[in-house]
Image (cartoon, rainbow, N blue to C red; front, side, top):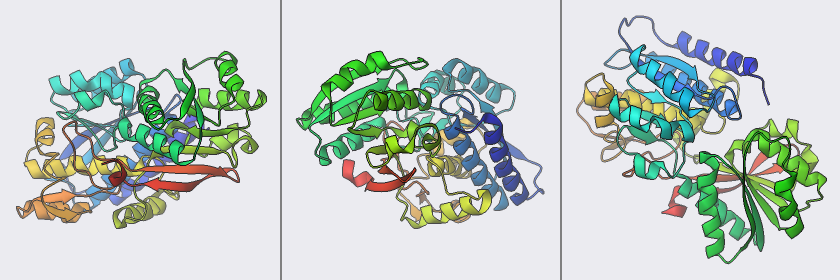
Length: 403
């Protein structure tokens, strides 16, 4: 796993590119907060999110910005900790005048719901799938990724299609891992597949041998591991030492290339899969986005990069559609730019259509963004497999699979 300095250097390079791309003629600015984990188990994802936001901001500003002025970002590291997230978000609103806050993870997102509504400042996440937001979201609380109901359904569908007869479930005691695991478990039971163990464990332990005793004794066909990067690595290594020879399905936190640096690829190759929310890479909007990311960062988009790019576009377009420059205005218009109008996938065209009084349906790099009552779009999912020390595509499930 990269160290924080490397992550910050990479992100700084992206910010520099975005700044160079943006014209310097506008004095007016409108601020959006970027609240992500740059440290902790989810640090890799936070860097990806912040980088994609900056690429979007650079594109928006290069096209002339918004009617409220150029977009300005303020980035803060919440470490994935809800209390720190509340402090940083409050500072972004009070000190920086942020009209929206982008990027919180599931646990931080839930903690910010009350603040967002009280301060009339939308919060938008590209990866907070927690089913808690199915009830709390929809007013000042939005996301550009499907609910964990979809993640769990995709995992259950994959495990069923693979023909496994027994599955053990190891689930980290965390908002973002428990909710999809609950849905996956129900899907397995409905399909008549035996769940040999359902164990919730606490992160930060030096060893998970006690949790693995029952799992290994029952010799399941596959272990579904919903864990963070640190705990997940330890579990994978200890299960291998314990003699587990079955297969694995991992959740999105482990869908990073660095996993092959910390776990012997021989443990993973040929029998390990990972499942995550992923846009349809064949869509023209995604292909265009991927080309931009490659040109500006030198790398293909990472997990949730497209969702992060899209949430930035939605804020800018909501500002345009509302004609005002406040969080309340963004909240009032954000749904309107994703449904019921002319289909469009690039910012400049969408902005010009809005200026001409034309309703739009913005479909982003991550796919359709029309939101349900909870402020959530339909999700699509990708299964990848470990092969020769890398993740490669195995099976894509479009959003229509779960409608």
